Amino acid sequence: MIVAIVDGYTDEPAGLGVPPYLGIYPRYAYGAIKKARKEAEVFYLTIDDLRATFKGEDRIRTKNKTPNFPNTRKILEKADVIVYIGGLHTPGKYLSAVPSQVEEIAEFIRPFKGVKILGGPAFMGSAHAGGTKITSRELLLARNVFDHIVYGDLEAFLFDYLGNPKDADPFRFRDYVELRDYAIIGAEVVKQFPDYPEFVIVEIETQRGCPKAMGIGGCSFCTEPVRYRKVEDRPVEDVVAEVKALYDLGVRHFRVGRQSCIFSYMAKPNGRVPIPNPEAIEKLFRGIRSVAPEVKTLHVDNANPAVIANYPEESRKIAKTLIEYGTPGNVVAFGLESADPKVAKLNNLNATAEETYEAVKILNEIGGRRGPNGMPWLLPGINIIFGLPGETKKSYELTFQFLKKLLEDGLMVRRINIRQVVVFPGTPLWNMRDKVKTEKHKTLIQHYKYKIRHEIDLPMLKRIVPVGTVLRDVRAEVFDNGLTYGRQIGSYSLIVGMPKEVPLNRFYDVLIVDHGFRSITGIPLPINVNRENPKVLQNIPGIGKKRAVSILAKRPFKSEEDFFKVAGEEVRPLLERKIAL
Image (tube, rainbow, N blue to C red; front, side, top):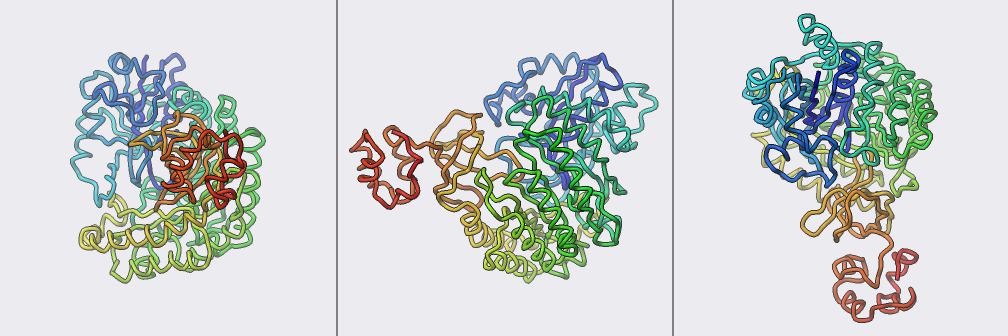
């Protein structure tokens, strides 16, 4: 039997599977297939493989070749089963990978004879960036193209289907006992991932469902409690065993990110705000480190700021654990969504503005110092959603003033993620969709997004990574229009634009020289002042175009002192011991 897994990439409230991230769905699917049919040949393909094969497009991400890339068409022609994994519920901007949607995959796979199975969160539809609703056309198309649409867990369906198709229930969910083997067996698929082994970061599941939702219901827009009606905490031993399997295969970058709130792992239910369990989280991360001692990235993702604000001592212990066992550059995403208390109440949001402020303060206190990779150890991120029911002009201003207060009070927020609300079937928002404000407030949304980017993001970036900061291990990913774009591997990594072309898929230490609204400009080190091009030299603060011309005229320099005589003493503090001759 031949099975083709086509990864269309996934992005949802509690999970990411967009390269360089390898999400949970392809791994679990591979594990379930191999457990059910050990002899099966299972091929992992990406949507980029299909784009290149059937559209002749150059692959967006990198110049890497995937193991299956030359044989994509043959694999699909011979496949008995074609499994498509997709679903974009929290759309964003991606550096080097573009998630697919049902319309695109349907065009590619319709001609092939294999049984077609749709899995992942795509059964609810996919959000277009900036969109406000899911069209029925996409869901109807899925029913016309796919033989089976899985509404429960894809891995559970695949295991049953490959055993006896008649017994397969597309609504069945597995538990963590069943998952254990799938996760460990499925680790092997990482070897077929294009960014393996140096650049892949693997998303690790620890919990599903929303603890707050079990107490008082979920946020109006969120699909997590719609898909998972109860909270399940994955046993520490199972998480550690999966990490070990991946680590033994050469994976060195992990994000313990597949949960709605890492601070609520193994927490005690308590209505709106569960009581955190610092001991369980310490056991989890100590266990991960025991089997992955030379891990290069160990980050997390989401947290409910209300938990941190209401249980500050327990949360401080958890933050210290994340620093002790984790790596710098870690970001905990806070779902504030709106600072307007009326909007928060109507949409049953996670936390108040006051709680979020306290949570930001606590994380800054514990994690604000700079780590060896150049980034602070542990900072918060803030998620904002525009267009929610109940919003007025005052709502946007309240949210802006909240962010401004964080800035004025000297606090650091690694990133502010602004999305327009998307309405998914099954969410409470679906029944309030006539009250969504994205179209009515389109001008307001654009205005406040502009204000936040210019008046908050830019000065905040300058605080987090001042000019002269050296970021270590920045992977060069994409070259475009004279710039090489790269980032460190991790959660919400800063995009660094390098004003020159450098070989891709290598790590660089980068000197930060300028800031944009959401990205920064950096120059790879060491800077060879005798060979560097004028564009790079004039990007260095204190040099500019005129001095760059003078430097070119005086080259080659025999010593650093000769260089600084021409470049000026004012650039010495920035460049000393960072140049080469």
